[in-house]
Image 1 (spheres, rainbow, N blue to C red):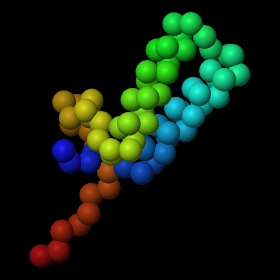
Image 2 (cartoon, one colour; image 1 turned 30 degrees about the horizontal axis):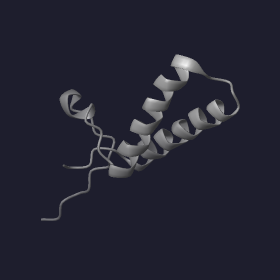
Image 3 (tube, rainbow, N blue to C red; image 1 turned 135 degrees about the vertical axis):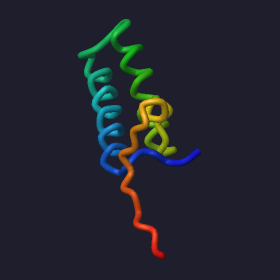
Image 4 (tube, rainbow, N blue to C red; image 1 turned 45 degrees about the vertical axis):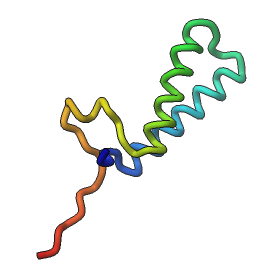
Length: 71
């Protein structure tokens, strides 16, 4: 599994997950919305930790900086 997420992408995902947690703890979201956003938050954290987003593969997206190969 090759990483396809850059640092900025990973940081944004973690920030969004933290935001969902804060909204939940502040009782701003509840019920079905809290469950759905909570699932997304967990997915965001997991993909950020691994550095790989399965959705990027079929879309052929990579936010990771490409390193130059030396000859």
